[in-house]
Length: 313
Image (tube, rainbow, N blue to C red; front, side, top):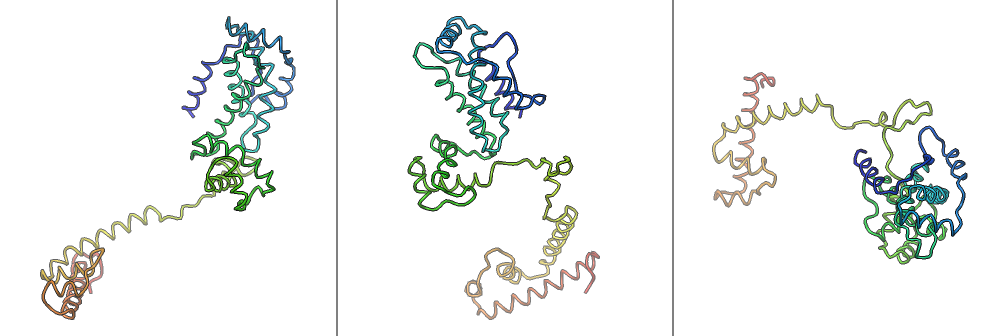
């Protein structure tokens, strides 16, 4: 959150100053409907008025001119924001992000090029909202290339045009059509569709009751072992390992080696391999292994009895 605030502050420092009366702003104390009603009070500029104000700002950095250009286009921002409601983000936040994009557009607008500010600023408004949606939708990056971003923001519309259901996988023919039209792979279309079906990330701190009591994180259950159980098992494993090491000293070198190679390593050797190594038959190796294992068990029980870790045999 701190990083985002810093970025927002940096962006605002680059925006044109808008002096005079405070501009309408969305906040906790103001509802969306009230904001929409308030911005309708600002007049729509004629082409001539817009040109003169844009020249004043471009040549003299007049804050009042910048303010009039911005406020006259706040309705455009709100209208564009309504088109992005399907991504599960508050419209008020989309409008706030779009207003920053609008201010960037006013700052960079060149009136002598002959087109209206709305045509130019629309790109900045949409870009600002889309970046906000991509940042907010998931902790995992969704769109890393221009084609993937285009896929993210056009998939719903294309599914609707193809009469595809919103919450189901696409038919292979539909996947091919979308991939071809948007210049992405079919795998990207399938993956993006499934991610959008799942929706964006949701906070575990969100209340699931209307009265605000209870959070989703309260419903989570840790299926792992308890900490005291893990500690007890670790201690038991350590005791058994200590017993094994001490009991191994009761075996001869050949018995110890054969038992280790047959039962105590990840990839055991075969009877044939050990018979060739010691120059005896496979049956003889098996007998040594069985005898060594029995001696090891008796030694471990005896040592455990002496330590009073386990009942003596």
